[in-house]
Image (cartoon, rainbow over all chains, first blue to last red; front, side, top):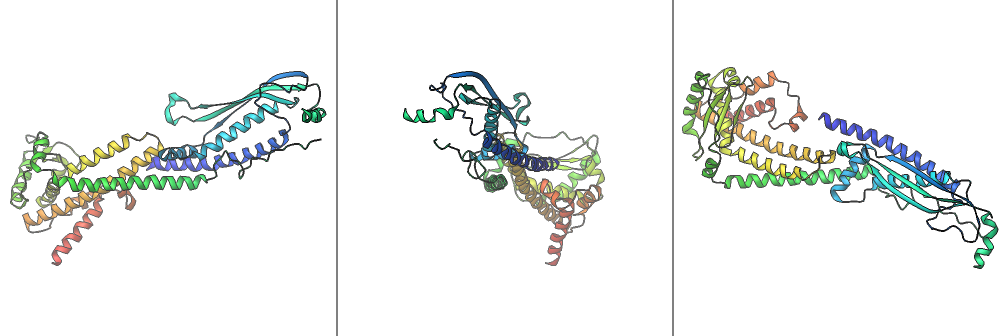
Length: 161
Length: 261
């Protein structure tokens, strides 16, 4: 009986603080994505062939987001029926976008980031078993490019290609 | 100058990467769904076991479990053993015909308790025999244990235990698995409480047949209720036996119905 009360209490705490953290984080992500939308982050290997590279740098953004207790219990129930683990989808989505934003924030002085890769790993303390605090880490990295000519000055010539 | 492409913001509503179902709704649906399914499975299992157990021939059961005995501490409790055997001899003519034979032992333990083992071994603790104020009280308890034997409740218990163990061993030992395991346990406990009530009825019948009176039927349960605070109402859901107070009340109702005839 006592165990049930503890589990329910932890779930309530997890739900209240987890949803609050998620809502706050999404507000911040949307705001910063709006600011950084003009800095392209693309997966292509090569920089823009029409412009001379002035300088380049390796940029990396990483982010670790923890699972909350409510999401963890809910995920176990999803696993009984093999449904989409919706409660983890938002976790991964937040971590991925946050990592890309942090990478972009490192490269605000550059024109674009090429060869962008995104990697995910889970941090789940295997020694401690299933009760360990599970979290996910997302790393986004790429090569930031600074060109000699600003992008707007070649807009016309790109179309004539 | 070409217009700059601006991707739409990925807000809550337009984000295709995150499912839109509400987590609380999902939790309630999934918990009720899996929990309900498990309770239904456990109830079907219980019914199946209750249907199958009477089909097992009694001689198989006697052969399978007959070897289970508890050494009698009769050199320590000769008077108690003698008393129980005397009551049993009086009761014997009234017992239903059966290939199962009851063996009675007294073991040294302060806790007042009695139990029936598979194969017909009935064990009384010395705490129970010394606390019992009358032969009628002991006859009621002996009748209850014989009820378990003739209703073959240990077979039901073994069947239910085996099937719930099989079911729970398939589940992981996390909180959601624990939730399912608890529900299985609670459902099997309700079957166990039904068996206790049936054994109580059998015991009362035996008491009547032996002494022509219901005197002493509720004494043990009244004393248990007075000695231990068993909590009320909801506590019964988490117990294999009905609460003593409820059992005493139930027996009084049965006695009342019998006297009214």
